[in-house]
Image 1 (cartoon, rainbow, N blue to C red):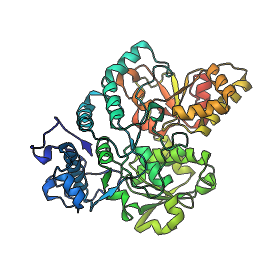
Image 2 (cartoon, rainbow, N blue to C red; image 1 turned 30 degrees about the horizontal axis):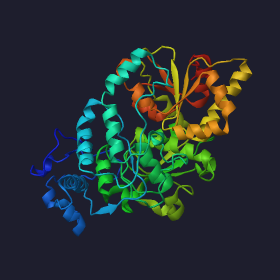
Image 3 (spheres, helix red, strand yellow; image 1 turned 135 degrees about the horizontal axis):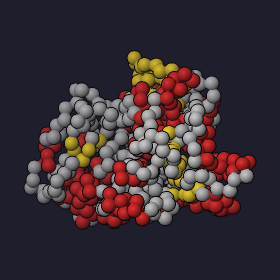
Image 4 (spheres, helix red, strand yellow; image 1 turned 30 degrees about the vertical axis):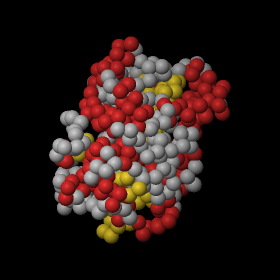
Length: 479
């Protein structure tokens, strides 16, 4: 689903032009809601809505609380009707939005947000946002590339200003991994949300036990302004049942991004129930959270998974066990051979296939405190073993400013040594940097993130080979 509009409308114009929600060109597939049913009719006549509204909600629809809020309500109801929602539910916790890239195609949505802000509307609670699309201070970009980025994100100031008007938290809280303890946006189990960032939706549903569909950027903010969202898909008990049993039978701990990628490509938008990995996780703590984040993000980008269950680990699976498996579920076994098969199919999308790597990206979604420590220890230890002072290519560790502050506070000397070795810490997004064709023609990035691999032309490597590339600037022959 996507938001489409060409103008900001008055209350007298037809409903089907209000903040219009366009149909998915692929037949409403891959919404990540598990609710893409052929029988769902996309009814754009809001006046004949199928959702049951309370009197208060109907009053809002009728304009008794202002024209702007009426249009927000009509759009949200239209969105719910498109997926057969039965009602609206109250949202809780704090919102999060993916929409912080100020490029020209987003201009109509910025106009919608400004119309809401001009009418005095705000989100029901302070909210977090995905990271800015560039970081000129820490990502070591040339003046030419900075200019290209500014051209691409020419409306960045406008979108940031309107978010602040609508109730966004300050920039320290802008991170795709808003759920880390340092950032603090981790709603309680069972909380209804209207989030849109694919990995954040995935993590909040799966690891936190919240209830959110994979909303598109823009529609989620209208839900958050309203304080309500349509009840369908992953917000329902039925929608959270697993249609796949994933049996992981690897000899050793898997590369979590590859495992998640394999699951995502197999189940697409369906909900998987994963077994066999609890031995690698133990309880959900600071270390295992990073593993679940990396696996989940890959299921969400290599497929469109909005929710997964891990036996004996995630909240729904702890509460209900294998009762979560839907009738007629399918089984997918992932062993060493299957992991290798999936891994070998990752293409080399560099514009120059035999180029030397220019930089390494680690932390998409943003790193945890423990992942920063882990990479610092690995790199510094190996540099010492080799009698080497600096790494061969820049290593950019992506993280929230608040996570970095925590890490620097605990390990200030390590941070100093990491910076001296050529490691940088940045709070931006590798996708918004590597997604620009003018930059990818000259930048040849490597990563251990399946999300970065899927959305850019960066080449994927497991942690071992990636460390070797960072230290030598060369791709190992057997990588």
